[in-house]
Length: 357
Image (cartoon, rainbow, N blue to C red; front, side, top):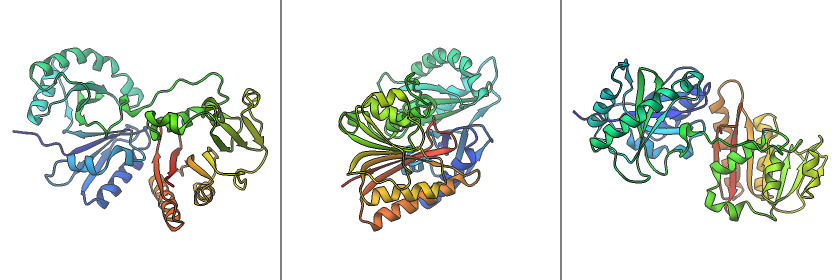
Protein backbone atom coordinates (compact mmCIF):
# COMPACT_ATOMS: atom_id res chain seq x y z
CA UNK A 1 0.00 0.00 0.00
CA UNK A 2 1.39 3.37 -1.02
CA UNK A 3 2.14 5.94 1.67
CA UNK A 4 0.83 9.42 0.78
CA UNK A 5 2.91 12.30 2.21
CA UNK A 6 0.72 14.56 4.34
CA UNK A 7 3.39 16.40 6.35
CA UNK A 8 5.05 19.71 5.57
CA UNK A 9 8.28 19.48 7.56
CA UNK A 10 9.93 22.81 8.35
CA UNK A 11 13.21 23.59 10.09
CA UNK A 12 13.80 26.78 12.07
CA UNK A 13 15.99 28.31 14.75
CA UNK A 14 15.35 26.55 18.08
CA UNK A 15 13.02 28.67 20.18
CA UNK A 16 11.04 29.98 17.20
CA UNK A 17 8.84 26.93 16.64
CA UNK A 18 5.73 28.71 17.92
CA UNK A 19 6.33 31.63 15.55
CA UNK A 20 6.84 29.37 12.53
CA UNK A 21 3.78 27.29 13.47
CA UNK A 22 1.67 30.45 13.66
CA UNK A 23 3.03 31.67 10.33
CA UNK A 24 2.48 28.47 8.37
CA UNK A 25 -0.96 27.95 9.93
CA UNK A 26 -2.06 31.47 8.97
CA UNK A 27 -0.69 31.27 5.45
CA UNK A 28 -2.04 27.76 4.83
CA UNK A 29 -5.51 28.83 5.98
CA UNK A 30 -5.39 31.86 3.66
CA UNK A 31 -4.60 29.49 0.79
CA UNK A 32 -7.49 27.22 1.75
CA UNK A 33 -5.46 24.46 3.36
CA UNK A 34 -6.55 23.07 6.71
CA UNK A 35 -4.17 21.38 9.07
CA UNK A 36 -2.39 21.41 12.40
CA UNK A 37 1.17 22.32 13.31
CA UNK A 38 3.00 20.19 15.87
CA UNK A 39 6.35 20.93 17.47
CA UNK A 40 8.50 20.39 20.53
CA UNK A 41 9.63 23.60 22.21
CA UNK A 42 13.27 24.39 21.33
CA UNK A 43 13.35 21.41 18.98
CA UNK A 44 14.00 23.43 15.82
CA UNK A 45 11.33 21.56 13.81
CA UNK A 46 7.67 22.21 12.95
CA UNK A 47 5.57 19.42 11.43
CA UNK A 48 2.43 20.71 9.71
CA UNK A 49 -0.02 17.89 9.02
CA UNK A 50 -2.59 18.73 6.35
CA UNK A 51 -6.21 17.88 7.08
CA UNK A 52 -8.02 15.15 5.18
CA UNK A 53 -6.43 12.90 2.60
CA UNK A 54 -5.02 15.52 0.24
CA UNK A 55 -1.27 15.08 -0.43
CA UNK A 56 0.86 17.88 0.94
CA UNK A 57 2.68 18.42 -2.37
CA UNK A 58 0.10 21.07 -3.29
CA UNK A 59 0.69 23.05 -0.10
CA UNK A 60 4.44 22.80 -0.57
CA UNK A 61 4.00 24.31 -4.04
CA UNK A 62 1.52 27.00 -2.90
CA UNK A 63 3.63 27.99 0.10
CA UNK A 64 7.24 28.17 -1.17
CA UNK A 65 10.17 28.39 1.20
CA UNK A 66 11.16 31.81 -0.18
CA UNK A 67 7.81 33.17 1.04
CA UNK A 68 8.22 31.97 4.63
CA UNK A 69 9.86 34.15 7.26
CA UNK A 70 10.82 31.73 10.01
CA UNK A 71 11.52 28.53 8.01
CA UNK A 72 15.04 27.49 7.04
CA UNK A 73 14.09 24.38 5.08
CA UNK A 74 10.83 23.00 3.69
CA UNK A 75 10.18 19.32 2.92
CA UNK A 76 7.31 17.16 1.77
CA UNK A 77 7.47 14.49 4.45
CA UNK A 78 6.20 11.06 5.45
CA UNK A 79 5.11 10.06 8.98
CA UNK A 80 8.08 9.85 11.38
CA UNK A 81 9.70 6.48 12.04
CA UNK A 82 10.22 5.97 15.78
CA UNK A 83 11.52 3.14 17.94
CA UNK A 84 14.08 2.02 15.37
CA UNK A 85 16.19 -0.94 16.41
CA UNK A 86 19.89 -0.29 16.93
CA UNK A 87 20.59 -3.55 15.14
CA UNK A 88 18.62 -2.57 12.02
CA UNK A 89 17.74 1.08 11.43
CA UNK A 90 17.81 0.78 7.65
CA UNK A 91 15.04 -1.76 6.92
CA UNK A 92 12.17 0.50 8.11
CA UNK A 93 13.63 3.36 6.07
CA UNK A 94 13.84 1.23 2.94
CA UNK A 95 10.32 -0.05 3.45
CA UNK A 96 8.89 3.45 3.80
CA UNK A 97 10.74 4.69 0.71
CA UNK A 98 9.40 1.74 -1.26
CA UNK A 99 5.86 2.35 0.00
CA UNK A 100 6.11 6.05 -0.95
CA UNK A 101 7.17 5.15 -4.52
CA UNK A 102 9.66 8.02 -4.28
CA UNK A 103 12.70 8.31 -6.52
CA UNK A 104 15.44 10.91 -6.09
CA UNK A 105 18.90 11.90 -7.24
CA UNK A 106 20.68 12.62 -3.93
CA UNK A 107 20.46 11.95 -0.20
CA UNK A 108 21.02 14.30 2.72
CA UNK A 109 21.12 13.32 6.38
CA UNK A 110 20.08 16.23 8.58
CA UNK A 111 19.61 17.02 12.26
CA UNK A 112 17.92 19.92 14.05
CA UNK A 113 20.14 22.86 14.99
CA UNK A 114 20.27 21.79 18.63
CA UNK A 115 22.92 20.23 20.87
CA UNK A 116 21.04 16.92 20.80
CA UNK A 117 20.84 17.17 17.03
CA UNK A 118 24.55 17.80 16.64
CA UNK A 119 25.25 14.68 18.71
CA UNK A 120 23.53 12.62 15.98
CA UNK A 121 25.86 13.68 13.16
CA UNK A 122 28.19 10.74 13.71
CA UNK A 123 25.31 8.26 13.47
CA UNK A 124 24.01 9.78 10.25
CA UNK A 125 27.48 9.67 8.69
CA UNK A 126 27.89 6.01 9.62
CA UNK A 127 24.57 5.11 8.00
CA UNK A 128 25.04 7.15 4.83
CA UNK A 129 27.15 4.74 2.77
CA UNK A 130 25.18 1.53 3.41
CA UNK A 131 21.85 3.32 2.93
CA UNK A 132 23.03 4.92 -0.31
CA UNK A 133 24.10 1.53 -1.63
CA UNK A 134 20.79 -0.14 -0.74
CA UNK A 135 18.65 2.66 -2.21
CA UNK A 136 20.66 2.55 -5.43
CA UNK A 137 20.18 -1.22 -5.70
CA UNK A 138 16.42 -0.79 -5.18
CA UNK A 139 16.24 1.79 -7.97
CA UNK A 140 15.07 4.66 -5.74
CA UNK A 141 18.37 6.55 -5.97
CA UNK A 142 19.12 7.48 -9.55
CA UNK A 143 22.41 8.50 -11.11
CA UNK A 144 21.57 12.11 -11.95
CA UNK A 145 22.75 15.49 -10.76
CA UNK A 146 20.38 17.88 -8.98
CA UNK A 147 16.70 17.08 -9.08
CA UNK A 148 14.78 15.65 -6.18
CA UNK A 149 16.58 15.06 -2.90
CA UNK A 150 15.75 12.65 -0.08
CA UNK A 151 16.25 14.17 3.38
CA UNK A 152 16.54 12.05 6.50
CA UNK A 153 15.89 14.23 9.54
CA UNK A 154 17.28 12.46 12.60
CA UNK A 155 15.73 13.68 15.85
CA UNK A 156 17.01 10.79 18.02
CA UNK A 157 19.07 7.67 17.59
CA UNK A 158 15.89 5.69 17.08
CA UNK A 159 13.78 8.35 15.34
CA UNK A 160 13.95 9.72 11.78
CA UNK A 161 11.52 11.44 9.43
CA UNK A 162 11.87 11.15 5.66
CA UNK A 163 11.22 14.14 3.45
CA UNK A 164 11.78 15.07 -0.16
CA UNK A 165 12.72 18.45 -1.63
CA UNK A 166 12.57 19.91 -5.11
CA UNK A 167 14.86 22.33 -7.00
CA UNK A 168 13.78 25.93 -6.69
CA UNK A 169 11.78 25.35 -3.51
CA UNK A 170 14.36 24.41 -0.92
CA UNK A 171 17.55 25.60 0.71
CA UNK A 172 20.70 24.30 -0.92
CA UNK A 173 22.47 24.43 2.45
CA UNK A 174 22.29 21.60 5.02
CA UNK A 175 19.73 22.52 7.64
CA UNK A 176 18.99 25.66 5.65
CA UNK A 177 21.98 27.31 7.34
CA UNK A 178 24.28 29.61 5.38
CA UNK A 179 27.62 29.28 7.14
CA UNK A 180 29.98 32.18 6.57
CA UNK A 181 33.50 32.86 7.72
CA UNK A 182 33.88 35.96 9.88
CA UNK A 183 36.29 38.40 8.21
CA UNK A 184 38.99 39.33 10.73
CA UNK A 185 39.09 42.95 9.56
CA UNK A 186 35.38 43.51 10.22
CA UNK A 187 34.69 45.62 13.32
CA UNK A 188 31.74 43.53 14.55
CA UNK A 189 30.10 40.14 13.98
CA UNK A 190 26.96 41.88 12.75
CA UNK A 191 28.75 42.09 9.40
CA UNK A 192 27.68 38.50 8.72
CA UNK A 193 23.99 39.48 8.82
CA UNK A 194 24.35 41.72 5.78
CA UNK A 195 26.51 39.22 3.93
CA UNK A 196 23.97 36.47 4.56
CA UNK A 197 21.15 38.78 3.46
CA UNK A 198 22.85 39.21 0.09
CA UNK A 199 23.23 35.44 -0.26
CA UNK A 200 19.55 35.02 0.60
CA UNK A 201 17.95 37.83 -1.38
CA UNK A 202 20.26 38.52 -4.34
CA UNK A 203 20.90 35.66 -6.80
CA UNK A 204 24.65 35.12 -7.10
CA UNK A 205 24.62 35.63 -10.86
CA UNK A 206 23.17 39.13 -10.26
CA UNK A 207 25.86 40.26 -7.81
CA UNK A 208 28.03 41.90 -10.52
CA UNK A 209 25.07 44.09 -11.58
CA UNK A 210 23.60 44.84 -8.15
CA UNK A 211 26.63 44.86 -5.83
CA UNK A 212 29.53 46.48 -7.59
CA UNK A 213 32.29 49.05 -7.29
CA UNK A 214 31.26 52.67 -7.58
CA UNK A 215 27.78 52.30 -6.12
CA UNK A 216 26.60 54.63 -3.36
CA UNK A 217 25.05 53.41 -0.12
CA UNK A 218 23.90 54.65 3.26
CA UNK A 219 24.32 52.75 6.52
CA UNK A 220 21.94 54.10 9.16
CA UNK A 221 23.12 53.40 12.69
CA UNK A 222 26.47 52.41 11.24
CA UNK A 223 28.91 52.48 14.20
CA UNK A 224 31.29 50.76 14.57
CA UNK A 225 30.88 49.66 10.96
CA UNK A 226 29.95 45.99 10.68
CA UNK A 227 27.56 46.56 7.78
CA UNK A 228 29.64 49.39 6.32
CA UNK A 229 32.50 46.88 6.09
CA UNK A 230 30.51 44.76 3.63
CA UNK A 231 29.63 47.78 1.48
CA UNK A 232 33.24 48.96 1.39
CA UNK A 233 34.41 45.44 0.52
CA UNK A 234 32.19 45.60 -2.59
CA UNK A 235 33.82 48.89 -3.59
CA UNK A 236 30.94 51.19 -2.66
CA UNK A 237 31.05 54.74 -1.31
CA UNK A 238 29.20 54.79 2.02
CA UNK A 239 27.45 57.49 4.03
CA UNK A 240 27.87 56.14 7.57
CA UNK A 241 25.21 57.79 9.73
CA UNK A 242 25.76 57.47 13.48
CA UNK A 243 26.74 59.62 16.44
CA UNK A 244 29.09 56.89 17.62
CA UNK A 245 32.69 56.30 16.51
CA UNK A 246 33.51 54.35 13.34
CA UNK A 247 36.26 51.79 12.89
CA UNK A 248 39.54 53.54 12.01
CA UNK A 249 40.50 51.08 9.28
CA UNK A 250 37.20 51.66 7.50
CA UNK A 251 37.66 55.41 7.65
CA UNK A 252 41.18 55.01 6.23
CA UNK A 253 39.72 53.31 3.15
CA UNK A 254 38.61 56.68 1.77
CA UNK A 255 35.23 55.17 0.86
CA UNK A 256 33.34 56.21 4.01
CA UNK A 257 31.87 59.59 4.85
CA UNK A 258 30.99 59.54 8.54
CA UNK A 259 28.15 61.91 9.45
CA UNK A 260 27.37 62.26 13.15
CA UNK A 261 23.63 62.62 12.65
CA UNK A 262 20.40 60.90 13.62
CA UNK A 263 19.64 58.12 11.14
CA UNK A 264 15.90 58.58 11.66
CA UNK A 265 15.94 62.12 10.19
CA UNK A 266 18.98 62.19 7.86
CA UNK A 267 18.25 62.65 4.16
CA UNK A 268 20.60 61.59 1.35
CA UNK A 269 21.96 64.15 -1.13
CA UNK A 270 20.52 62.14 -4.04
CA UNK A 271 19.21 58.70 -4.95
CA UNK A 272 21.45 55.93 -3.63
CA UNK A 273 21.88 52.36 -4.78
CA UNK A 274 21.61 50.77 -1.32
CA UNK A 275 20.18 51.60 2.08
CA UNK A 276 21.14 49.32 4.97
CA UNK A 277 20.04 49.66 8.57
CA UNK A 278 20.70 47.62 11.71
CA UNK A 279 19.26 50.09 14.22
CA UNK A 280 17.82 48.46 17.34
CA UNK A 281 14.50 50.19 17.98
CA UNK A 282 10.79 49.49 17.96
CA UNK A 283 9.75 47.79 14.68
CA UNK A 284 7.09 50.41 13.95
CA UNK A 285 9.61 53.27 14.26
CA UNK A 286 12.17 51.57 12.03
CA UNK A 287 9.48 50.70 9.50
CA UNK A 288 8.25 54.31 9.36
CA UNK A 289 11.80 55.48 8.62
CA UNK A 290 12.31 52.88 5.87
CA UNK A 291 8.89 53.65 4.42
CA UNK A 292 9.88 57.31 4.02
CA UNK A 293 13.01 56.28 2.08
CA UNK A 294 11.14 53.92 -0.22
CA UNK A 295 8.12 56.09 -0.91
CA UNK A 296 10.45 58.95 -1.84
CA UNK A 297 12.63 56.55 -3.86
CA UNK A 298 15.81 57.60 -2.08
CA UNK A 299 17.35 54.18 -2.74
CA UNK A 300 17.02 51.34 -5.24
CA UNK A 301 17.39 48.52 -2.73
CA UNK A 302 17.23 48.26 1.05
CA UNK A 303 18.18 45.72 3.70
CA UNK A 304 17.10 46.36 7.26
CA UNK A 305 16.37 44.54 10.49
CA UNK A 306 13.23 44.55 12.61
CA UNK A 307 13.73 43.82 16.30
CA UNK A 308 11.14 41.27 17.43
CA UNK A 309 8.96 41.47 20.54
CA UNK A 310 9.11 38.67 23.11
CA UNK A 311 5.63 37.41 22.23
CA UNK A 312 3.50 37.19 19.08
CA UNK A 313 6.56 37.70 16.91
CA UNK A 314 4.96 36.42 13.72
CA UNK A 315 1.94 38.68 14.20
CA UNK A 316 4.19 41.74 14.61
CA UNK A 317 6.21 40.87 11.52
CA UNK A 318 3.05 40.28 9.47
CA UNK A 319 1.59 43.62 10.62
CA UNK A 320 4.75 45.55 9.72
CA UNK A 321 5.11 43.95 6.30
CA UNK A 322 1.44 44.45 5.43
CA UNK A 323 1.67 48.11 6.44
CA UNK A 324 4.76 48.66 4.27
CA UNK A 325 3.20 46.91 1.27
CA UNK A 326 0.05 49.02 1.62
CA UNK A 327 2.03 52.25 1.91
CA UNK A 328 4.09 51.47 -1.18
CA UNK A 329 0.96 50.55 -3.09
CA UNK A 330 -0.78 53.80 -2.15
CA UNK A 331 2.29 55.75 -3.28
CA UNK A 332 2.41 53.92 -6.60
CA UNK A 333 5.81 52.41 -5.84
CA UNK A 334 6.33 48.97 -7.35
CA UNK A 335 8.59 46.83 -5.23
CA UNK A 336 9.57 43.28 -4.42
CA UNK A 337 9.60 42.65 -0.67
CA UNK A 338 10.99 39.63 1.17
CA UNK A 339 11.62 38.88 4.83
CA UNK A 340 13.55 36.06 6.47
CA UNK A 341 14.79 35.07 9.90
CA UNK A 342 18.40 34.50 8.89
CA UNK A 343 20.88 32.20 10.60
CA UNK A 344 22.96 35.16 11.81
CA UNK A 345 19.88 36.97 13.12
CA UNK A 346 18.92 36.53 16.73
CA UNK A 347 15.84 38.35 18.04
CA UNK A 348 15.26 40.12 14.73
CA UNK A 349 14.27 39.43 11.14
CA UNK A 350 15.87 40.81 8.01
CA UNK A 351 13.82 42.54 5.31
CA UNK A 352 14.90 43.19 1.73
CA UNK A 353 13.11 45.55 -0.63
CA UNK A 354 13.99 46.12 -4.28
CA UNK A 355 12.23 48.93 -6.10
CA UNK A 356 11.17 47.91 -9.59
CA UNK A 357 11.03 51.38 -11.15
